[in-house]
Image: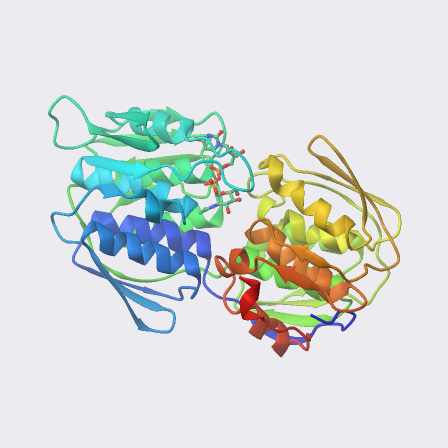
Length: 419
Ligand code: UD1
């Protein structure tokens, strides 16, 4: 890509990757047909559809953004390593498989590039509902014990508000006998979207979006038609890209309240942001100031936008600090940014960024999905031509990123050999 061109125009945000993956997993709980709308056309969704088919279900695209799914009364309960390794979120099949069929065997994708991702909270939660699980030979497997047909409700306190653990417990508890209370649960908008979807299927979930969720189990869940929320991380990425290139962009199809921490930090930096009904206008032409940022569970600043805002701060005069509290390897992108002239020191989980005048172009390599997006932003800021390798990571979570960037005036093209 050719850097130095301010992004200008309008960009439309796709459906939320993380809500979609959880909701697709939840389809396992439903009898009948489900139609999901506003889905992003990204690789992770294709892989989840592949897993659904491999288990014995059906999943097809009806039209762009719309998928039809059906899971019959008997399916396989084992997700093979070949598929699970491509998708970290395959661990979300655990709760629904045990909830409806009483048993699950899910290959553990292992730690990925953003760091060690343990499953202890998922196991603790499902055990609290009457499942016995073991981790052996790279699989996490188990199910309902003592000859019971259904899981039972329980009171579960999460030591950390894990998104995935909250989702797995919510899905499993939806079909359990009795009431489940989850304390200190995650509050992300994707949790609320999953709860709304489950409730549309017939579940009885209250409190999603707060730190206490109550689930009254039901015997059966049905198929529905449901439209997924917009992707706040994709939206935040374009907001940051607009600011970083000192451009002016209208980001469309967003829920501005989902982006409050990001909007607040961008304003602190000096970016002008106007929130409209389902749009956000970003103007990055003013004076920028350094800031300190800590990643936190929602409503704090999202770890999934940390690499992107770090890139923006590399050219903001003065010293900024970023503390990454969720995934330790997310600061790996710094090594690539240094190759582009950024001045950043890493001390443990903290990045100390000394703003430079401009970044310079280089050949760099994406190390994970969000790092890939961040490096594309860096390339758009830098003088000269930048090449980002391993963009396949970016395709996992961003729909047609080069097309959307091109519509905003960026000079960017994909080379097939790039992977
Ligand atoms: C989800 C998102 C991911 C996002 C992350 C945090 C999906 C598909 N992915 O990932 O994009 O970056 O939330 O917002 O929705 N932890 C434990 N034990 C566990 C589970 C998690 O210690 O059993 C720790 C993790 O190591 C991490 C923290 O909890 O430090 C947050 O992880 P979690 O919220 O579970 O993230 P994911 O659901 O994997």
